[in-house]
Length: 402
Ligand SMILES: *Cc1c(COP(=O)(O)O)cnc(C)c1O
Image 1 (spheres, rainbow, N blue to C red):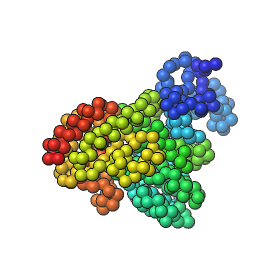
Image 2 (cartoon, helix red, strand yellow):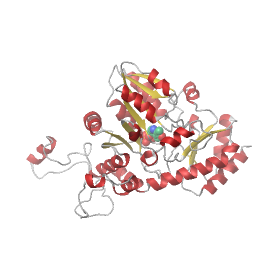
Image 3 (tube, rainbow, N blue to C red):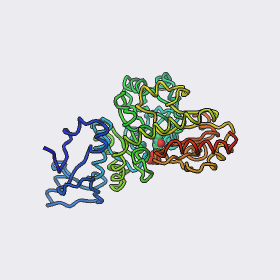
Image 4 (cartoon, helix red, strand yellow):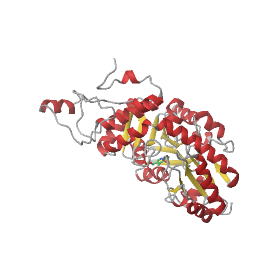
């Protein structure tokens, strides 16, 4: 019997990810609406004083306040958890809210965190600037070096934190190895999976404990809203993350949750097509740039590792021009189809100069150390016909003398 209202988690657990992306977590009201309902409400009403008391006491199921629960947000959380193969998920106001919550909910003064140095600028800030302010020690290492993780462990190490592929260097971290080292030492591994999503890479299957997202990127995929999510075991989400989230409030708006639910319906299609397009474009321009950083191409030093842990390499790659910042900027200014934009995951092709934008806040030394060179450009390949994208990049390369 097909249910038209309500939601049966056990029935949906067995579906494959592409099915989950369209249907997982759908909860229908008594109206039987096809598309997920948007519950744009901050509060709830109750039939009696006793009923609200029972809900606050946890003796009656039901929502009490949208910082604690909201039906539209809950649908998104259930869908992401099902796609990820996670026991539980909590949505966050943005990717950085997700990273901050995932780390601070479990760290205290006196603890130590080890993180990969190739990372989104704000993730580096979180680890190297915010954590130490609250007495949490941090060590930043080359995440590609498997031995470096174990060497950095101290008696008080609580968390390993990395993204793979990394923004914007496209460094790959060996998820299986690093998460196994973490497990062996009772350390919690937190993986920022924004560049891949569950469609292309499922860190939990490789032993990760927590997967954190900027859903602003591929999940929304159409450049509309900021959103984030953290996935993990029920124990971690309910006992460690929830007390932090409910009391500090980095919650996702129901409207933004609804937009991301719509985005997830096409995520599988978009992620695969954009990955194919990114490969075609990468191959076409590789011979004309000084260095290509594309995990899907054999020239990437970690190509085999990327192939071993990803279904496809995603829509984003970077490349270096020999002429440094002036040539990189001239290249951006010469683009006609591709937009100059620091967003990624969008269905439009977007290109940016990380050293002066996404990684502007990171010191010049740290940028050089993590490989964010002055001549580096990062590109997100969209859903346009790859022939048009290639033609645009080729004319821009010609105009800057390449
Ligand atoms: C964009 C991004 C973030 C931050 O996400 P927001 O939604 O912009 O807050 C974190 N990690 C990675 C890898 C990102 O690309």
